[in-house]
Amino acid sequence: MTRILMVCEGNVCRSPVARALLERALPRVSVSSAGTRALVGRHADPLAVQVAREHGMDISGHVAAALSNEHVRAADVVLTMTGIQRALILDRFPSARGKVFRLGEHEQLDIVDPYQRHRVIFELAFAQIEHSVLKWCEDLARLMH
Image 1: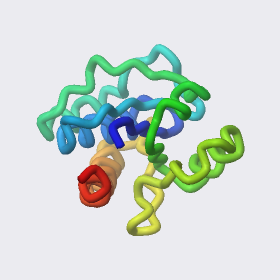
Image 2: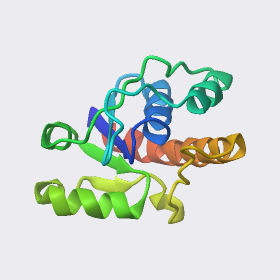
Image 3: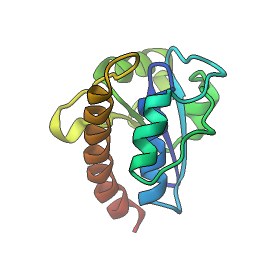
Image 4: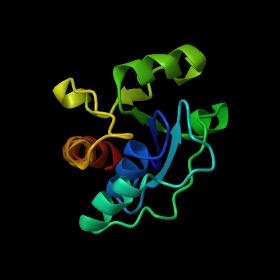
C-alpha cells in the first residue's frame, strides 16, 4: 500500500492538513488530496496554513483539486473526512468499494469542517485529524509489513 488519497469537501482545509500529517508520519507513502466540491485552483485556507505551520508543516503551496475517477483509481486507500463523503464516493465510483474509509472511523467520528469558521474550529479539526491519522498510521504500518 503506497498511495493514499485524502478527501474533504473544498480541498482547502481538512484534506491538505491530513495529507501533510500523513506524509510526515509515513514518508515512504505517496499521499494526495482532493475535494468532492473542490474550490479548484484555490490555495489552502489561511487559517489552515497558520495552524499547520504552528505544528511544523507547510501547506502554503497546496492548490485545491476536484475529486476525479483518476484520483480514486490510482489510490490504494481513500480516506474521507465524513461518512457522507464516503457514501458519495462509493455512489460515484462503485469500483472503489473496499478501499474507501472515513478518516475518523476508529472513533466513529466525522471531522468537523472549519471552512469560514473561527480559529478554534480549525484547531479542533486539526486535533481530530491528527488523532485519526495516528490511528490509521498504526493500521497502515501493520499492512505495509
